[in-house]
Image (cartoon, rainbow, N blue to C red; front, side, top):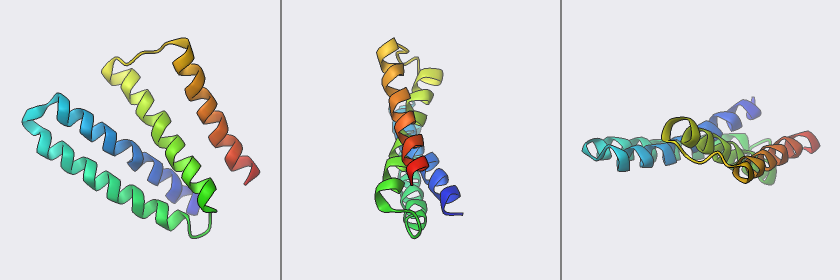
Length: 106
């Protein structure tokens, strides 16, 4: 169950930069989106805390940040027109491979 909590934590890790981006894009609702960011930060931390009870801290942190980084990058590409250059995609792929490798050797 700890791995499920860790993935949930990673999803919330995506929520806070997304909330900040939306706050800067839709300034009329910036307070709402910043609130979403703060809630996402808190929930991400709580789920990471729960996951770390049985998953080593290094493994949990790498996966948490990797899911957050990859998820945020994909949201940027699909919803905000961020770059899809070869090297950018290459290096995010390397992060994903590293996260999977960390899980495999756990």
